[in-house]
Length: 399
Image (cartoon, rainbow, N blue to C red; front, side, top):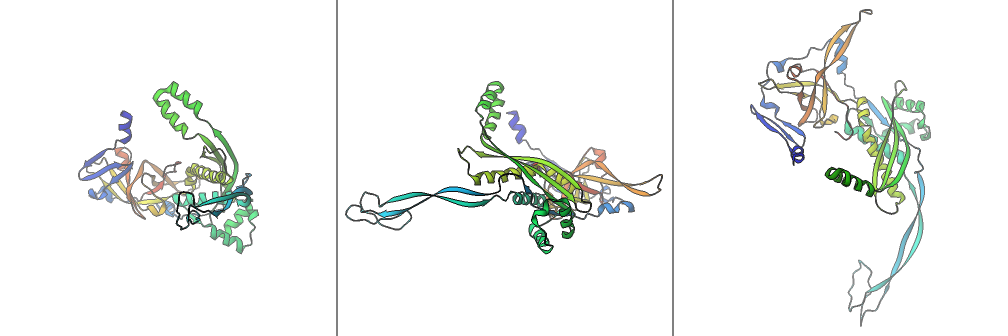
């Protein structure tokens, strides 16, 4: 019973006409319940050397089809096809032969017709298009995350046609860099589909052991294992990010995803290909944190509100749903100082991350979002209008 209460517990507190509650894990706030205090009117002074940090140019990114290194590509599929025809039958004294779905009247007790059937073996061409499918999955992930302007596949193909690029040459880094420069993008994202593993998992033995040795907890775990029983398919991918300006591969990550195809005795080629694509999409989610490090969402604070007891503060940032901001995401906050190189005698900007985070509430607009300032009571007082904010790297499966 305690576990259940902990899972559904959600605190609601009403303080000084300020509503702050938790519904489904998303914080609901009414920022206008607090007046703007003298502390909220303070604006961060940005040193001249640090103003370039506010140049929030969103990088342009092109996603190129992944290389398919598996044996699942173009294939001929042999399948059976049932054909047949209905024959008229006399029913009682009078009758009309009908096929299923046809309009007719039947008299008597016998069937209206009988069905003569035969099986034909036919072949059809199938192209898995795994490389294209994975690239589209990466594109969808980037668009959902925000922080990058994604070059569409159509735009990239247009550049390729205009420059007479050969699709077969897009596995070479130098060729991709050249294409990226012509397309005017900062990064090229590509990779490969490396391996597909298909195996049957039987949960019976594991379920018995868990139930016997771990009691109730084991029974819960056994129920979870049961959902994984049957054909399990895993897909291994490599994802790469290439910096077009330098030609450097700035990220090369091996990722893997899994999909349960069920307990059907025989799998069709179409079912396997569908499973590979779903497993690949699950793998791409694993790369979310790494991708978000390169495609950051940045903005700055445009307003703050402070509770009368100074124990709570709220900040309005100038990025919202258009940039992929969602409830529950967290932002770092930066202040600045100028440091002088003792040897070069030059001024340099030093970005200092404050020991606080901004958690996005349910108050999100297209270009704005209200956040809760999280940290100890002294540190949250350091948050001011004009300070730079940057979304924290995103975890798999979270926002």
